[in-house]
Amino acid sequence: MTATNSKQDEEYNLFEPEGLREKVLPIVAIYGANGAGKTNVIAALMFFVHTILHNHRRDFSEINFPKFKLDPSFEKSESEFDIDFMFEGVHYNYGYIVNDGVVRSEWLYSFSYKQRASRTVLFHRDVESEDGEYYFNKVLKGKNKSISDVTSRSSLFLSTAAKSNHDLINRIYDYFKSSYNFRFRNDVQENAIAKKIKDNNLTKDIGSFLSLIDIGAVEMNVGIYEVDDEQKEIKASFKQALMSVLNSKENVDFKFPDDDSNIEYKISISRRNSNDKLVKFKYGDESLGTKSLISLLASVFLILREGGIFVVDELESSLHTLLSLKVVELFNCSRINSKGAQLIFTTHETQLLNYKGFRKDEVWLAEKCENGSTKIAPLSDYSIPNKSNVRNGYLDGRFGAVPFLGLMNNFEKLWSE
Image (cartoon, rainbow, N blue to C red; front, side):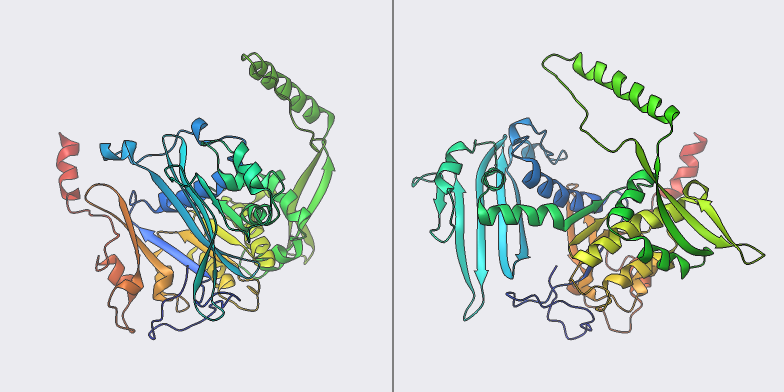
């Protein structure tokens, strides 16, 4: 997510992190036809982050590793993941290669640009190396050898080292844990959303946003209530029934973690009636669109406040085009987005393509190849005059990444048959 050097694009809210020569984009929008692979692109990122965070508990030998199913040769091919990220003012690259449940290679590099660009190999792992599976640079302090000795071939050294209190790697692990937030569906479950809003003091920010859009809201509140006896009994009986099923399995001893299930969080939105008096509406009274917006804003404002990467599948889901645009504009505002948060999202909302704040390298197009695989490329790879209507060009198929509907004329005939 770094900017090109195109002189045609305005710089808008590009970030210039210390320790990096390139400028970083605050937004990336991914367009493409249904089934083009947009979701798979960001799902791969989520899978990568998930393996980093949980590999020490469930290694690759226990994972049904996703494979490309449209080409039989991929069944035995290696899967490679890597990512460049900025952490504590340093540019890092981390990645791994896995095949048949075995980590074939793993690495962590750092980069310096003080005098000239240089790369430092902090650690490198290669199961086929004649010099031993692991190489550790002396600048990587910690119990590297002893940790590598207990890291199985199906486990990541980074995940194992993080759980072994390795100083630098533990901090990098925490970076992945705190910095990436994924949203793949409209989660409008009230208690979880309200708790997130309350715990992170987001009530005022979300309430202010809602009061400025045309839903009549004046303020929003989050209350904490004790669960009544009937609900307690329902929860207790459900837990008991679920535990009975789970514990009936061989070698399973399941227990629910302690939680605050005796309290619940509720959202209310106040509006003015015809007598200019405030009337409270329950969260359940709101439309799906309003619920989706509140859920989305809870994550958006938290990311904007603390920094990080927010990855959303179908940003416009249940939202009006102008509301989707306002969310995008929040990340493009340097005063609001002062922590350098980034928004990556897939969308079909073509109206956003006319947003003047979009650079061409912030709009990516996903297209299905002949073999069924997906390729993505930014609009900056195309020759587009500055005054062109990008939306019309996209819908006309000038850049690809749109559905081919040429055979739909035959549908009526097929239907009648």
